[in-house]
Length: 506
Image (cartoon, rainbow, N blue to C red; front, side, top):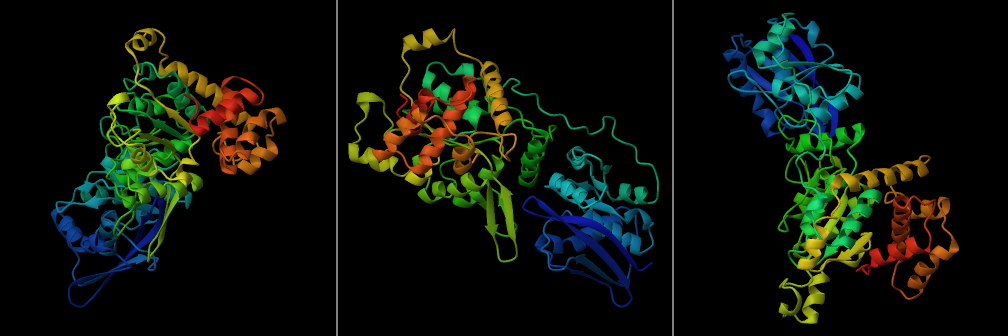
């Protein structure tokens, strides 16, 4: 046999595309030709695979070897093709049977000694291949637990090329003593808790509202008032991810290489907190060569915390506007266009002035304070539903609140009930939270009483709120009604929603 084929997969973002790996053995001088738009790492596979084959006790075929990766017009990147190419070369040489390669997707990098090394992005690769009808996969043992998250597929874990050859020859491969079954992390186990934050009742209430409706949140206050503490505890009151959401978040973390060891399935909302020196590419995604997900995608289905927001570059902050509206990031490159999901809750925190000194200790002129906060553009703040100001907590407040601070478990129970009410109301729509529903659908399908709109109407007449702001205040009002177990928001809910949107709730 001089021709053999098998399959691998290439990733563009988190979307996988099946690649047919064909190997032809011909006469003539020795040489290996690799065609099909490979990148630099893939071109190096020729020498890497030859060493792996020889060091695994197999014979490298002589003569000309042509390796084709189809479709030829699709860019291929990375080292995950090594195992598929090695298997096809050995099958074309007649060293192993070719039958089991048909309909099998092989994904792994090979070391020079023939060991199979795990690669990034196995979960989205297997999901994409399974969606195209492939059911049999061979992966490195380090990727087995991740691949087995996909239902109704057969996953064979190998330690190296020797194991692949034994499997192709029909020999039995013993499983590890404890099969790689995904072990999700326990929700809210030994992590931050909302009861750690004492005082700040308005801000704690805003965190609950943000969790119940999926709203964006802005916190303003001097250092030490609990802004970071509250932001870090927002994920603890959010509901656990549904199975489809967990797979989406896990796929992005797999591509980014940040899956926690021993817990391949992300079951709780992620929390991402980039530093204020982060570039636009690190926030949105991209990079030279193969684009990688940015912080907005790593926070998909979770929380993106932008601390010291005015310290970020204005262009970096304004780049958040599109993913906040669309729920995805589109990166256009000369060779391909890559899309990463980015549906997250934005939480921003800022000091009231550059010096960040509390009370009478601040020496910043009013003009400097305005310039500092003006780094947060109006269009970005217009997309934030809740704005609260935090003041330093007194000793008396700390002592009084110590016995009454609610835990994340108590608040999460209220959030879950409110979300259930919203999901039932929105069951005939594609949306599940109040923050997600478009303003036009909100006004048309879920009208409120005219009396409840009086506050927002007066604010519009005075130029205190935009049309987009009215829609966002109405979404918050519906969340307040859900938390209060009311059928629809009244004047009290819309007034408080406007106060939260405008930053007048303190």
